[in-house]
Length: 194
Image (cartoon, rainbow, N blue to C red):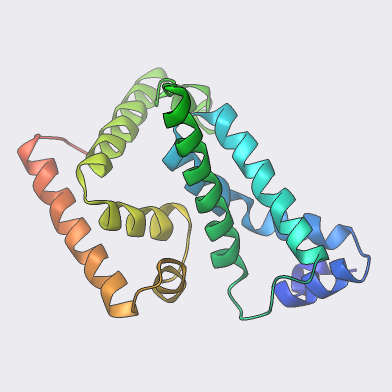
């Protein structure tokens, strides 16, 4: 069966009807977006893996319970579940007084970087670290819209729905985020090209 031609809703309906392959197709379709969003927030690959799995466990349970209704916003819905799990993680971490691990660990362990030269890897690691640090200087709303757009792959309409704001507000936040990032790059004399 050509599952890749199915819409999200067709896959959901088939999964609810008993076709387990359909949930695998949905996970494959969105795993990069969801995992990137989680990792950017968590900064620890092993914890990000756990939250990613928990996200899709909740997705599966919700789909089986017929909680999801088709609004054409499946990815937004999954990102919202992941976001809530991230918030829960940080609440628990705060209560336990735990600290996160080295934020550059993901870059150093990334298999996608194994084909490049050592110099390329060092530059990419530095760029990743610099951009990640710059995002931390942004106001929370601006940081969120950048993560949802560039790491979550969401449209501005999906971002607006996920964050309960208008599209114009989401666009405005992105505009200010980019302006602030440019200012920060200039202030800190960071070069973001290889």
